[in-house]
Image (cartoon, rainbow over all chains, first blue to last red; front, side, top):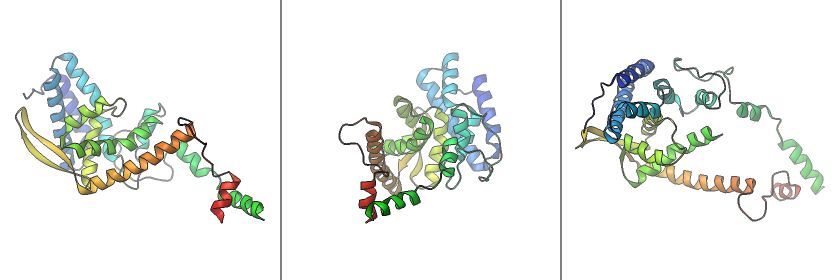
Length: 135
Length: 124
């Protein structure tokens, strides 16, 4: 059974999604919105479309901004997942709504990744120990 | 730590679901939601599916549904199968290594890179 999507909260959610997705290529924007519409419709058909159900479905979806930000995740060569890292570990507020851009040297990194990069190389010490052992 | 681990593993969990049979989006979400902690914001599965399609790991087809509008079904491609097989291998090794270091399995502790004897063998 197809469920109507004209509940005010759903309409508002889809409006925000449309706005957040404005920076995506037109084809992908339409596709994403269609998929989310389909999802909401399927979910409400499965669990009922009373007030609590609508809230629950939208809550579990995550925010429209978060969904659009996920469009950048995993693009080979960049690491836009940092936006999520900061959000999920409770660090700086997420930077939603920025135009797509490549990584720049000054970008914030996850603490672990910067620690790893700045650690001194360990190989020389290791090799030195080896020659002493064998010599 | 969990967000990073989840993000890395999630796409392969999706591929694994699709190996069993083609799924439509909400169907994928429903199955993943049953696995605790895998999917936090359900809507982010759609960008993930879009990326898997761009990478040629899944294909999509529209199919009529007797329950409403047509559904977009996702199915695994041969490349997707290969990627999944490789991940399963990597995952097994990774999991075993972490388990050993954490002391979650019995047996001898791993000989580490700082162990002079191990270096000696490798260097010659």
